[in-house]
Length: 234
Ligand code: SAH
Image (cartoon, rainbow, N blue to C red; front, side, top):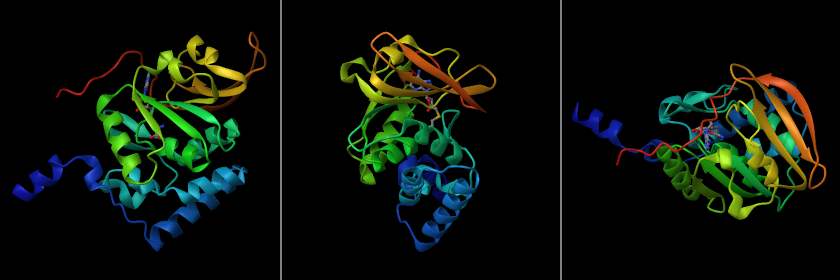
């Protein structure tokens, strides 16, 4: 009992497996093949998925399943997105090395790591304090210390580092926040799932200071995009 208690009270990142074995690499390669089979064609995105150990971002309890194409709980009623969704959204952004990319909804930090693996300069915002702290510590422990993490309400974006070449929202938004559109550089791309029960992916391109081009794509299901902050009771 005593040992059980000590395990469950440890922080999540100390429970993560931080070794990347041949077995993990093999499973990851199979995941990449499955994503290719499902229609992800962007080879740079597939290479990033192949390079980032997703099991580092999951609780040890889910380690066996880390390379299935499924979402999993990460605490605070949130989930790490399904690899297909991560790959789909990342491909929409057409990330180029050196791009300034803003992510809303850090969650586990996995999507941020994928963007960093593509050479982006990543700014990521989370409204749940516990998740923000875990992700920030984990990203720096596993070699992604260049990712800048912020404890913020992402409905307002992150104005002090704007404009961004790309913005990605990883929670389902009832509407597209004007602040996010305003923080896009001209020529920049915003990928955001919009809707209540089911969300449709939107790809919004800022075509000039005053004009945007919007495209509605496939249906997805995300956790909700909420306003305000959730501080952990410390
Ligand atoms: N990108 C994440 C998936 C996160 S799930 C990953 O790779 O693991 C969506 C996240 O968005 C949740 O952690 C949720 O707390 C966060 N979120 C929801 N509304 C938000 C808001 N207004 N500002 C910042 N984060 C928000």
